[in-house]
Image (tube, rainbow, N blue to C red; front, side):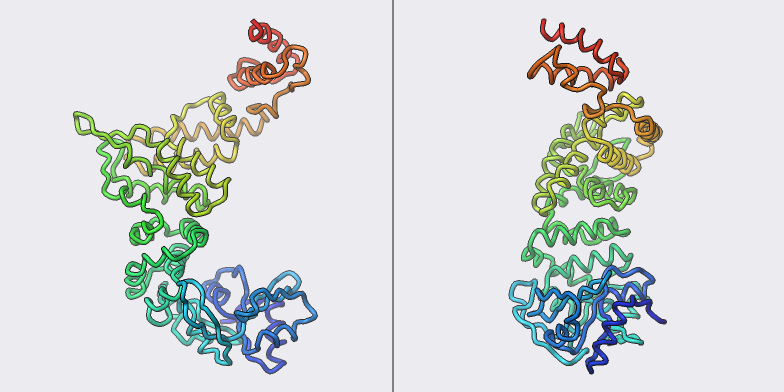
Length: 443
């Protein structure tokens, strides 16, 4: 099999080889190419020392920030390439990065330090596969290079990386690797929260995220302890067929791989353990779980160092996930005024995923959601008004009728009338309504 290599990468390999150095494509670009996927990055490993690499590519812009670890970033036009010297890693005192690296002239030594066999293959005209990575690819299997516990104790983030690869590639974990993932899970406490967050969100957007969450829940409870009470939390309702944890996982199966959507669905019922009550007939109720869940979701997002926008969006989706869907453009316009178009679309998606994970009696909501989506499309297509920015009048138009706080109240009353369909979004009609409302507000 021949890899389809970008011209810039081919030029870099040839430049290093003409100078007498070994050079190979390595890691994810080889793995993805063998899987028929398009690599995101192209990395090269070489026997050239960093200063030798820098000298060979001195005619191009270079980034030398990683030089002490052997990496020179060469900015080829249209494709940056990381070129890294063969190396052996020193001790990992912090369970994340080696205290020192030692440059080597041996490709075997370089490949032996890598995390998983599928990432420890090299290529230059032929595949260099010293640890049976190609076989693991064919078996759709994640296996550590060497003893799994050693690899995870060196860099504990590899625990989540193993699960992320399994989620995104629909792979399984080899038996010893799977056992070490569970045994070493508490080492994740040594990893910076933002790195945990980055890996977890990528994992959560993988095709097999629900299955990975189900199989390895104790790993995720290390940094998301709020998940633990969901398992086994029965709901005893004709609308539910699963406990809260299984309901959540089934809802994720119906969720697009958008980070905010996936995280909101994972957390949508996170408040239920705090709000459970049982009536005289044995029925379960979770009154207030939406607001409780929104507060927990906000703390989770902040703990994982997610952006302020993601935090606000996810907590809003959790807060409103159980909203009562009602047909009609006025109802949709009201939600658009509260959330805006993108977030309201996501709210409908969350509600649909939640509904599909219920028992069949709840499916009667699905046609209502379909209608809400049709109403939304019509509102956007027709440019209907649902915000002050779209209103056909502004503060200057109304200055003769109200001032200060009263002017703001008047604008919102006019917008309410348009949203509810009581007044067209027409300048003259709104001015006439403003005259009547201004007298009421002043009175």
